Length: 439
Length: 159
Image 1 (cartoon, one colour):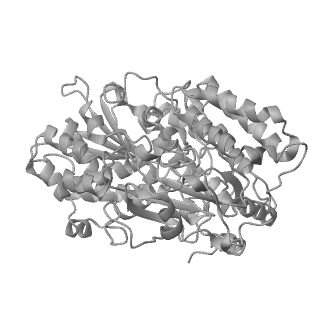
Image 2 (cartoon, chains in turn purple, red):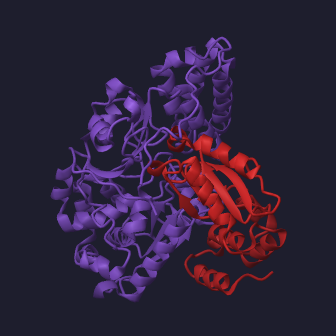
Image 3 (cartoon, helix red, strand yellow):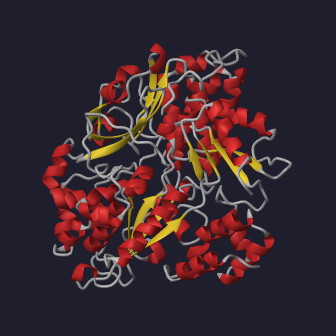
């Protein structure tokens, strides 16, 4: 069980039932549970889509695409069944929010899946949960069984004359499967190799049928939008970036934790006020604002509104909400190396620029960190990363290249400090014992 | 090849959830592994036959997923995360400590078959780093001392 934290600046929407026992279906009903879906069965599908579209809800998995717009791409008529697929394969380093949603409010995800189904004319949904989250899979299995027992799923839900089934599905360890087309491959019982697009999943998805794929946090937000209204939800955030988001604060902070803050919340405040600042009187060196694939920001770049568009303008991405804070004792080369080691491990090997690029970068960064770097390696690594961008079927190649380019561009001196056979000048003895221990 | 009644009941229900049999493959492999400790040749052949797949097709899937293994490992698989958020808070030291304590390296197994050790990628415990999983149990906000008591807890668990 992950521990909960809170801060006065939080606006609790998705997290409002955290810690309130809402895994119990009766408790969930007391807390406005299944009210949104009852509203949805009385609405026209297009009205549901428009509400979600106008709320400014954007994909919480990282891409930040307008959710209602995504739903609107599903063809009205389809000879093949349509599907809703909830992506709970949370594995972007720095991200641990969907875990809390499944742990504390699984019915909200189920409700979101059903509403998405009503909106696009589907009768079947799947909730895919990563293999490591076994305890969450069990919570979801129980929640689904309870929802069926109450008649909220299955035939003629809420007397609407419409049927809707939701099934659970468990993974077995793969970051790549969090990418939507690889996720479908995995659910179909195959290796998680991405599919070429177009056609997009909204047209040709699971078993060839139109499929809506949304992140768990995205779907858990939907019931709140239907109950509170698109205008209310949009008003919580910034223009075109509706609502709130679960930010996962980690790294060198006094109070790491998952906090629900309005879209557009200032990053500096997030680090120094919500996260309690940097321990041991140290200074900020860098922050990875949205999971390991997003380009790092330097201390003079952190006065920025945390929404999709502002971060894009700042040369980074809001990504998955994983805010990783690095203090001034961190070696950027080592951090870049650990990031690349991850992508090299997770690359499925389908696309050559990603398979070879991540391996080559890992090897170069390893040599570099050990003091065997050459001056020309620095530009070579940048050039190599640049050539991975946009040349792969799925964004894993980009995810490996983007942070590397930012590290080289913004922290070139640290790379240069590793030259001429010098071992890492930043390496220190211990990190584990000097940080505050959370209760 | 016999699996538990619970496995069989779950398997039968899962087959009704999808339009194709093959879709049950990934979760079924993990549940099978949980029962026998690893995916034996026998288990692979059995699952392949049930799903109208060849052994090779099943092996092809197994090799993709990091949690699936065709080699036996310890009763308790200690998985230490050293990815970025854990690394910043001492994940690598924690791994080294476990290596020394258990006398094994990455993917090694103790001679008594009680523990295996694995360095793993992000397990979704970033805000509670450093973290490790023993089988499916999460252990978070770890220190070297806390890790010792976690290992002791499993060591002394009634068999």
